[in-house]
Image (cartoon, rainbow, N blue to C red):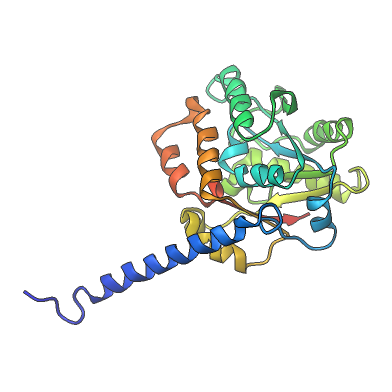
Length: 267
């Protein structure tokens, strides 16, 4: 039986629309990243200057081993592409399932594939900063650890989560609260900028490269988009976290926009 005017028509139109969106997103992605560091990072005023200047010492402040690649791989690789010196301060060993020692080694392996040597990876393993989605970390204690590391390593650019923590994890949000405290109380060294990673809605979070046009159109202070080769590099780094590679994380690697795109705002 032949399909009526309302039979296959809508389905075909939907497939064509998705194909057009995917093709456009891929072309925009290639064009955006083809120029190297410049087109992959946009900013305004002090943010743009800090991100492009020589001698940038960037610190990624994360809550758990695997955050650096699950959420921040585009930023880490983009900063490296721009010539910045990047380091990681992970504020717990990820010991929720008593795997802390394993996860610290996996973190170093992942960071190595992202271009960060083990000497630039620091893990804070403090009993009052436990890996626990139900625990909000003490702001003063956490801020003290972060500030000490910033000052000791002459950091002039910090990247962490925003108030949504991407996944709503209490430990992620605690990092934002600590950096916001340091920023608002003017405790950071002069000239030290703080970028926070934008939390997006569930739909955008899992449409991968289809979010490229949306991210390009919406305002942000910094935007990193990975090439296909860099995305595969990020996936290899994610596979270093073998203890965490449950079935749903394989799906995450395929569909999460955070494996391809990071949009950030200046605090």
